[in-house]
Length: 443
Image (cartoon, rainbow, N blue to C red; front, top):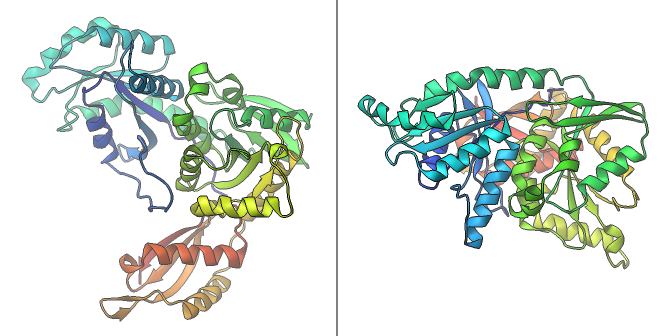
């Protein structure tokens, strides 16, 4: 099975209008991840996965403009989002405006960043010509060693920053490699106040065979390993779940930010939802993130004891849930009460079943037999009058199950047909709990 690896989180911070979005787009443009549009999710994210220097996978977060004492409620939200992103960062790109010069807000943010004791790279932006590099001198008084004149708009100086950051990125990658071979890596994710901490405590409290607390990456994450049914399970960053700051607890709107690192490092993500509340926009965003990153998934409906029961209540609830999260309907659903611990162990049972299923590899002959049956009943359509043929396929990897499908017109296979094909393959081979990736190649 492919090991779960942590991508370093690089957060871009700075005052409003210093060019943060331009820098974000510049870095993302190097190798922006291609993500298929999924229905039912508003794509207003300010984060993305990329590969820096063609070598280092990383997650970038573009924050709103930092203001030390915002007055308006909207600006306060932006400020809270910025501080939460700083909490989650492995590296910080502190962007300032060389043309505007050093301002008091720059000093306030610098003091905040120094307190984090995280690697900070000070980028003096809008230096569009070598003759303008002198504009960066004033910023040395902020006390940072790593200062780089750059132009986010034109790209000059960016490679110097990334090459200087490379040793930190290598360190994080090495830490991720050292995490291999520890069995199932399980992340408990969800928006604040849905019961993530209670679920983790229930899992640990009912399983006294705790092997160790494992120091994690440069984020000071703590992973807790337990043994269940003789199988090692590592709960990702449980200290982070228990110790989240007040800011993180308040930031329901930006819950996805705190989920990025945990989902990156896991094999399977447990999305904890508030059953009485139903599906929210934040639930959908975190579910979307799990799918993007190709992780196994299950849904834990917490506070199920507070839901009024009638005949078929659970069945009807799940049907409605899958209607709201159609793209996430591959994830099995478990109802729990994390506070009392009722049915909490069903989460581990379901996760282990997904884990075992995800390691299976489908024989090529059997895969092509099923493909022929599917295509015969539901052809892929036509491209410029010619029939689109799915000729044959093979499984390229596990976790997530990824299939190479050879066709005469890969670019013409419609997104709807790709989703249809993935759903049929999931049914045929019982890939419950696992997203399926289809890669179409020309034959």
